[in-house]
Length: 386
Length: 246
Ligand SMILES: Nc1ncnc2c1ncn2[C@@H]1O[C@H](COP(=O)(O)OP(=O)(O)OP(=O)(O)O)[C@@H](O)[C@H]1O
Ligand SMILES: [Mg+2]
Image 1 (cartoon, rainbow over the protein chains, first blue to last red):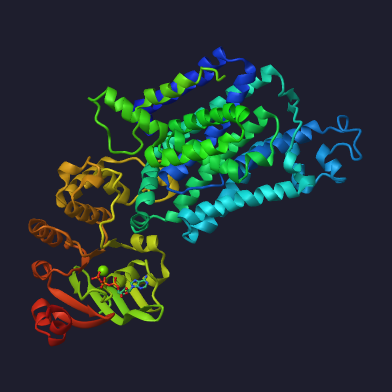
Image 2 (spheres, each protein chain N blue to C red; image 1 turned 90 degrees about the horizontal axis):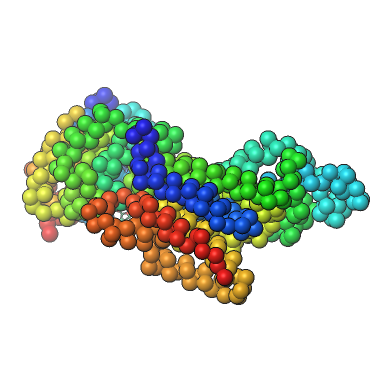
């Protein structure tokens, strides 16, 4: 039992997760009406990406400015399934070609493209949500890391891939729905996902998936592999000349981060009801890094809170002052990087250790004062913005 | 002869944009030998180690270690073959504790899966303790490695190699930046760890070389200038001219 606890970062780590679970699954649903809870669910989908970035960037030192790509691939896979289900011949009988998604009909397609076919199957879709982004990340990671491409170059290349994917999706309107994305999604295996009841269920499913991702993240960080990530970030050559195949390790952590992002993307589609290129492009990808940095790139729980809080702030701000948001985001990023490199989680843990001076701060960079970390997030959560 | 030699470097050459850092070099190390390599700045000493451990790829020549050709192996395979290398500037993981530094360097748990599910065994704990005693860091085991003094960092990196139990240990200027007592302690350390393995030490400090060395190789402009016991090398006129003279 103790060994099991230790694998997830000790009791304090599990308390963090328990507090988050309580807030997400009890406090929030009890105090919020479903419209807003559904929005919260949308913010949480970014937390998946942030957790992945903690592993890949915070620990592994691999900055990806293209996580939107994987978020998008996961989201699009799910959207393709839902769209096919919504495009029954009866529902689309006014089209020139009934039975295919409406945007294809508008673009003079008369047949479902071959790569859409497998998405009739839900089992395949669930598989694809994970496998397609994983394969893609493996391909990019393998090509880059085996050639020892890293640092800024890797960041730029991933950003470029995000741009390219957006252009591709927008350009191939007939196959992808173009700039509007895949919209008007209705049912999942015959179950209407637009009802309040369904939104509750999807919100809870999203919470559970996120908690599992948090646990997985904690497990990875607290394993020998997690320490290896820190080692590779700080002294890559030393790791290589201690007998590790550094490229393999990097590919793995990049794939993990991408799979987390993809799961988030799939839940995004389910809860928001559509998927479009704006959520996966260059700007969205950079925003995801900001979420992670603000929350704390060395804390999975911190980064998840950061994703939630910052995307909430974004919604509130960009509703009232749409021009200001990009400036605020830029300032936030620069401020955090310069003054609080460990983000909210770092602030909370410093504040926590001041409150409890008896507790020696450990040397591991993953150290956080757990309960306070989540409580600070909780403190802001139930208050409704104007 | 091949059997007595653990390392056979033959006709080795590497050039950087036409500049020959190592030039048609022949270099042999016996099992259980401690060899000191000296030479002026830029002689190619570090480059020689880079070539052996795979950090730099040779333009020509062969590097045979236990009859395996190292030039065809990747860096981690060379480590698995039994070659350990310490860098000129201490390379340790400053954000981890001394214990974690040693643990990460231990063999086992070197693939993704095995490192994810790796568990420290009692045997590994004993081994870490034993190494820590050898490198004078028992009391610092749970200290963050970034807090160690410069000399202690050098020792830690040596310890990180020892835990792999390499058959060939290569140390690039292990006493650079050390105080006199630390140098003496390091000489004692080297004399202890040279049992059962071959060691190549690059060094500038002549007093230190006398403390540990028997056979010395003098490198100059990528070539071997002289080789032999310390006394003989010291009295070689060409060596005095390029190196010991000033
Ligand atoms: N990657 C490289 N690219 C170009 N030149 C290099 C490279 N590595 C080494 N050199 C050059 O090769 C020569 C030998 O360098 P090396 O570092 O091996 O010398 P050294 O004997 O270790 O010197 P020191 O005593 O200063 O450590 C130097 O002139 C150096 O500038
Ligand atoms: Mg050198």
